[in-house]
Image (cartoon, rainbow, N blue to C red; front, side, top):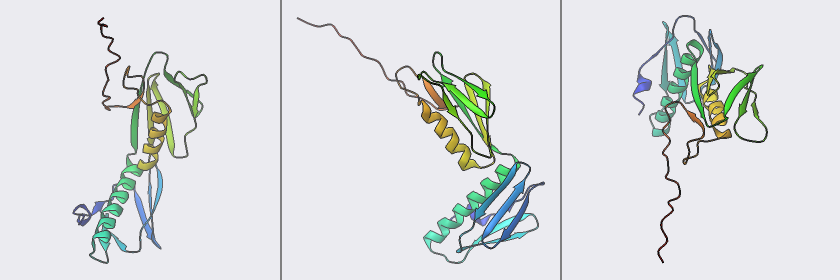
Length: 182
């Protein structure tokens, strides 16, 4: 059973929440997010709090209650403060730059990789080797960051490529050339 879903979600200042016909719309300073609420889950909104209840007590509905609680919490956090992922680029000649809204990555390929962000996502280049993905939707921020990382994942021998900030890459030893006896 989800213990977190027993607690109410607090609606911060500047965020409005509307629940109609199984759809929860959350508006804030950073945008609007709409979540579809399953029919087995009910919502109560009163006095600046959201309570998430369930109609049945079986395991699947209990898990669904916790899922809905987490999705609503992420939506409230996203429209009020937002989410971000930082990516580090390492390698000789590897760098990032912006051209309008597009992100241009020089990653050792013949042509540069151009990435156009979806709506609701902003891409920032703090330094030529640091890219920041920002947005209100946590899932979309993670998907875009994962796509950027996938253009050149870190290789374990020299450590070249794109990785998340704080990600630990286990390095491998190269070829060991031994003496030939004979």
